[in-house]
View 1 (cartoon, helix red, strand yellow):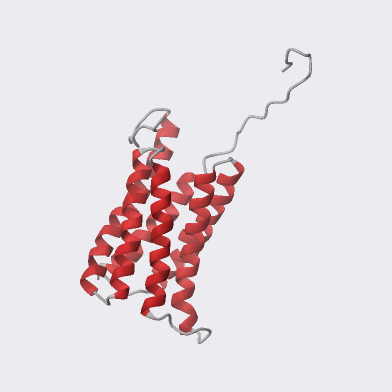
View 2: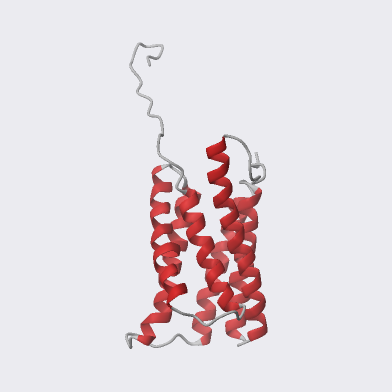
Length: 199
C-alpha cells in the first residue's frame, strides 16, 4: 500500500485466533466447581484444586497474555489477574496443609475476598461499554466476592450457601459466553446472542 507521498505503508493483519473462549471456560468451570462446594454439594478435594491451578489458573493466564498481544486491555487484565487469583486461592488452601504458612484468619480471608470484589466491581463498570453477557458475568462476580467476604467475616454458613448458588450462575454465564464465542465465529452468524455493544 502507498500513501499520497508515495511512501510505502505496511499494514499487518491480525490472523491470530480469539483467546477469549479459553479464558472464559477456564474461569467458568472452576467457578462452578468451587461454588458447588460452597453450596454444600461436596467437600473440597483434588478435583476442584487441580482445576483451579491448571484450568482456572494457568489457562486463564495464557489467555490473558494472548489478549495482550491483541491489544485488548480489558481481556488481558481480566484473564491474567483472575488466573492468578485461582492460583493464589489454591495456595491459600494448600500452604497450611504443607506446613509452609498458617491458615489465614477470618478477617484476613474476608479482606482478601472483599478486595477482589472491589476489583470485580470496577471491571463490571467497564463492561457497561461492552456486551450484555460480560455485564452478567461481572455483575454476578462482584456480588459473589462480597457475599463470600461477608460469609467468611461473620462465619455465616447460610450466606456461604447462597453465595454458592449465585456463584454457579456466574460460572455458567462465563461458560455460555465461551460457547457463544466459538459457535458464533464458526457459523459466521449469531447462534447464541451476547447482547449489543454500547457505543
